[in-house]
Length: 312
Image 1 (spheres, rainbow, N blue to C red):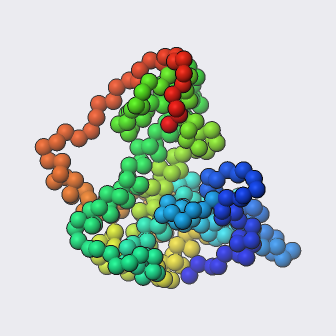
Image 2: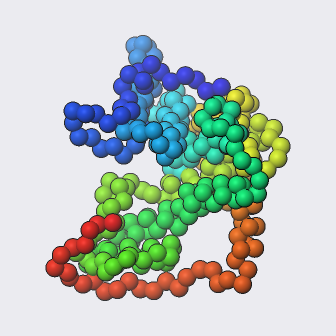
Image 3: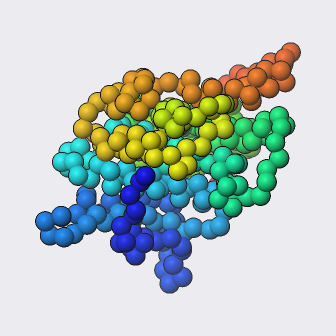
């Protein structure tokens, strides 16, 4: 039930890497004129910029960026002050909500894949793969801004930028560098959003919100059965409920907007836990008698090396 994209989207977007110039290929979505000027017969000018390759990663990234585009189109009739997401996390969660609904049965129904194997083993494999994207991201999504905020408030000083980065990665992710990474390196800069000065908590929030949105839309579509099997493809009731939420923009408190779609006005990881329930139960069985977790230790003091190692 979503509207068609304007013709100008297809004419002005960058879908593949140009052959005649260098471009930044990091995918992004753009609202160029905040809905246009209806009185002057100027329509919305929305665009995406990507260097698409025929991979699964780019396939899902397209949906992520289109989530931004449809959010822009939905709230553009509002006054400029309200032409934004309910909060930063909402904008990043829209397209990813649709990705959750791309179940194996859905992909088979549109001819993207052949008949899929069913059974507990295939389910656990599928959930483990999804969890590497959705669950393992959470500590990373949190630590990025922990580092940025520390830099901004002065608690992380320039002479300890890299040390603090790896201490946070050890604390939240349980990972360490393969070799000594002194202050002659700036490993945080390898993450696009750090030198680009893009706040990152929005992605942490989005990874929780998308499961709340997904469950709300599955309920609107009348889905019966396990949450992870839900696809609301072609269901106009779900589409209308989603579009209504998008049209709110930032015109009301985000808690109110969230409740209209999900029935809950609080950030809630419950739908994520429900989605991954089969994997969680399997992991409990596998981890019986095992010690899970890690002890984070402080990073090694900064040292000067004569030849910098290859950046990771």
